[in-house]
Image 1 (cartoon, rainbow, N blue to C red):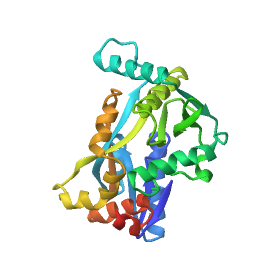
Image 2: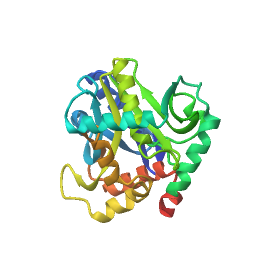
Image 3: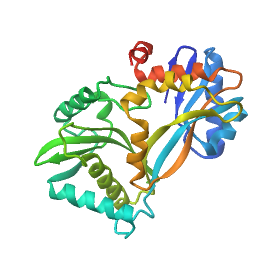
Image 4: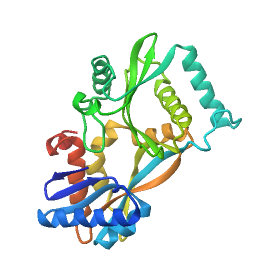
Length: 289
């Protein structure tokens, strides 16, 4: 998946496939950019593929870290403090009447979930985002399985889910809860999904990326605080990044670095600004926030 903003063609995530196939796809994307007189930008790519991006003349900017749960070792019955706290949360939420249901793609009651999404957006005082962040759009959500949390029959939270046929990875995309939902509803949703995908035989479950407070070039000097402030200002209001990392830490994830790959010699601010504008839904929305 990629999108254009200004002179940047921004690809989301690494290409999928064996190493040689990934390398070829990266070169093909570079050729596509040359054809359209655009600069190639790869957003949220993994460290293992950085040599492939450097081969086409890109450098890497570390954006943040992705929280990944190893489902082969996750054990809610473990006696350590973290798992005891998670067991308490799950049991308490179940006693309070929360339950989880998972709908196949195209089967979720989206009209029932729309008010939950609207209330969440209003409580955060933000607009819908896009590109790397999920959005509430029925034409988009109908392609994904959707998990719904109910309290005494009423929908109070939901998330759409990204799955792989290989069972290697499942991930959250859009996740929202009504502001009047019980306090630990989000934790209940994530825990229930971890256990669900563990039972399905998946290897890992992703809680998504948390941007870094300080952005640094992999080669060269640190970017200024102004750079990070300008580009990720909308995100900081959308999700409290420090609070988001603390929230995800309780599930005992492994953190893996994620990068932005941009052409060498290009001011990274240009690529970052184009990417942020795509996520915000356009430069006017970026400036408003």
